[in-house]
Length: 100
Length: 100
Image 1 (cartoon, one colour):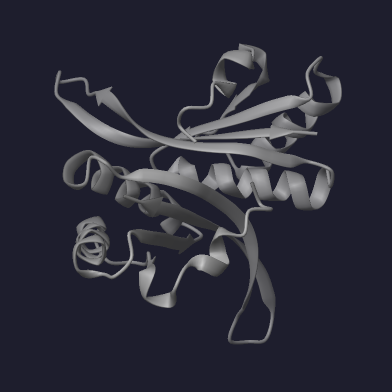
Image 2: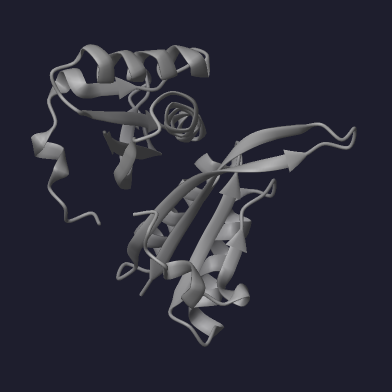
């Protein structure tokens, strides 16, 4: 799965970054992207504790809003995060590739 | 991805359920399973907030312990959980299929 080059096909505007807002904020962002965007693809990206929320968003969009939605690929990885004091730590990441 | 029938090939003893223990407990469980088990496959399963931890476990096992580890498939879904008062709520789930 990590070998698929899906990433390169995705434009920046198709990415929804999952952070600290409530789940429904991102659900609406993703649904809106599918409805108004020029693309039929949306990628959810999250790091650390937001990973669980990214899965929630994907499932809610699929179960409640866009039934024909497919999860094409899910990638996980590790990213290095620099803290303010200059030290670095690793954080897990997820990318959920969805299309309709 | 949801259509692959990887699930049926996996025996119960190859599954590591991710819960509330520290990450390293599950990392060691997974590494031990790869080393002593009869199978070269391990599946990490988690629900709700433990989903982030499951990704951490997978990444730590791969980056720090078993470099040749591959993530074969990642499935996400929704499960219904019954509370003690009889009401039901939905919770997201993840299954990470790993092999070496």
